[in-house]
Each structure stands twice: as structure tokens, then as C-alpha cells.
Image (cartoon, rainbow, N blue to C red; front, side, top):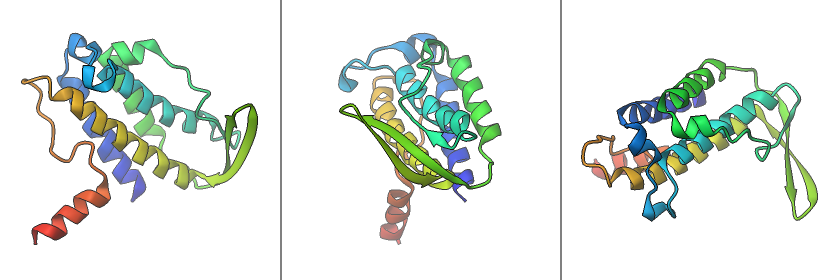
Length: 162
């Protein structure tokens, strides 16, 4: 189920990116402290890439990201990276260690692949909500009303509507 949710969410992001010109993708948004849609997209993509690239070692450190400028400035590169992520999602669940350096101290926290997929899904949705703020400045871009909305919120809204 989580794989299907991630696929849906990343496909929504890919479809949105496909609607944007390079100028729109790279335009700073004042409401996002001058961050761009491309920067938020790159951040989402690279978190998933970290999980995939560090899966075999069993130690995941999300701070060890490439920070690929091309993904944040080239919509085709971003969509290509999303497609690669989608192709590599299905892996067996296994124990992982989440590594984080905080104030010079290394922390290793027990986790697993499915838990980290869930983290990445929620993180992705959070950044999509921020991207939606930037999209408001464009009159030509259509975005689903559920884009950037947590699955639990969507379900809650459905219950309220009944």
C-alpha cells in the first residue's frame, strides 16, 4: 500500500513539473523565502535517492545528499530522477540504521525500510504543500486540490462530507 501511495504522490509531482517552463520551475517565490519549485523538487527527489542509494549499506544519512543543481533547474532531469525512483522503490523490508549528526554528536536510530518510505512519503507531501504555495503565483498551472495534502487529511475530509 505504501508503494502505491508513493507512486501516486511522485506521479502527481512529475505531472506538475511537466506543466512548468524552466523559468517557472526556477522562479524564486517570495512566500517561500525565495526558494524555487525546483529546489523543493530536488529536495524531495534526493531524500528518496538517499534511501535507495544507502539501502544496501543499512545506514541511511539524509544529510549525505548530492544536491544536484541540474535536478533543481531542469524539469526533464527532475522527471527522469523521479522515474528512476519509481523503478527502484520495491525492495524487501529490512532493518536500517538512521544516522544523524546533531551538534557534533552522531546518533544511530533503529529503523527499517518501510518506516523510511513512510517518512519520505510524508516529507514529500509536506514539500508539495510548499510547492503549491509557489504554484498560486501562476495562472496557467493546474494542480489537483489534494496535491500537498496528507492522506489522513484527505480521508478526514471525505468523512466530513458524508
